[in-house]
Figure 1: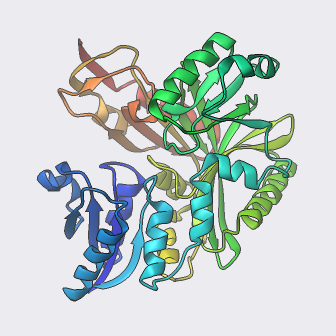
Figure 2 (figure 1 turned 180 degrees about the vertical axis):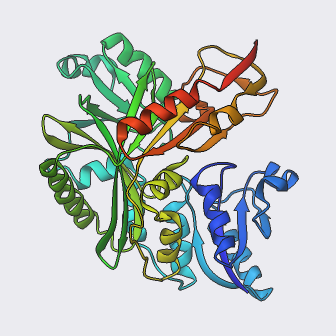
Length: 407
C-alpha cells in the first residue's frame, strides 16, 4: 500500500490541505503528531488513514522505529514530508535515511535558521544590513552602537511566527524587546536587521533538478500594531517588467547560493527604491490559503506538484488560466468570548467570491492580533482585474460579523 508519512499538521492551512491532496492522489496517509487532540478529535483529520502519536516528533530513533513498523505492516513508504516548522528539513533527512526521493536537506536546514541564512547570503546585494546580538552582550555595551541604526528589527534565529518579530524604534523599546525575546528564547543569539520601507511580497518557489519550475509573486498587505500581521494577499503581485526580471535574477542567485536542487520554499522580500531586499526565507510553502490563492489565479495546484517532487516525480506546472485573486483576512478589535459569527453565506453570495473560511468555534477566546494565528476569517475573491478582486473581497468581508462577550 503506497504511503506518505506526514510529520505534524495544523487543523487548517497548507499542512492540512497536503493531507487531503495526498489522499486524493491515492496514497495511504499517515500523520505523526505530538497532539493528543488530533486523536480524540479525528473528525478534523478524516483524510488521515492512520495517526501515530509521539511524545517528541524530533526523536529520530523513535521516528525511524515507527516508520519501520509501518513497513513491517506492509506499507510501501513513498515519502516523508512536513510543512510545519521546525520539521521540514528533519522530514527530508528521514526520507534520506530510508533512501526515498531526496529533497535538498542541507538547504532546507539552512533556511530554518535566520542567522545562518543571513551569513550564507551576506555578500549578495539582496541582504540588508544586519548584526548579531550574542547572549553575553550587554544592553549598555550596545546602546551607542545601535542608536544610529534605529529603527530596526530584532528576532530570534529559530522561529515560525510573527509574534517574535519586533520593531525597535527607541533604546527603551530595545530593552523591552531584549527582555521578551530572552525570556522566550533563552541563551540564543538574536538577529538585528535594518528596518526596510517599501512594498512587501511573498514569493512561492518550486525547484526540481536545479531548475526553478515555479515562481509565484504575491503582494502582501501588512498591518503593524506592535506585531506584523499580513491581512491581505494580492496575486499576482504588481511590479513592472524590469522589477520582475530583477526579482527572477535575485531568486536564481539565492537558490544557487543555498544549493536548493529539489524542494520548495517561500521568501519574503521588499522592493526598496527599486532594489529587492530579502526579509526572510522559509523551507516550505506558505501557510493559510496560499495554495488556494495560487490555484484560483493559475489553475495550478502547487501543493500537489510539491508532493510530486517529494515522491521523485517531475512536477507539471502549466497555467490553465490567468486571474487576479485577492484574499482578505479578518481580525478583531477587542478581546472577548466568541458567541457566534454570522454572514458567511451572505459573503459567498457576492459574485466573484470563491471561498470563505471561518476559523474559530463558538466559545473560543478571541484577541486583537499579536500573531498570524489571530486572523479569524478569510474571504477570497477572483476577477479579471486586481482592483475588482479587491473590491469584491472587501465588500463580502463586511458581511461577516463577530459577536463577542467581553472577557
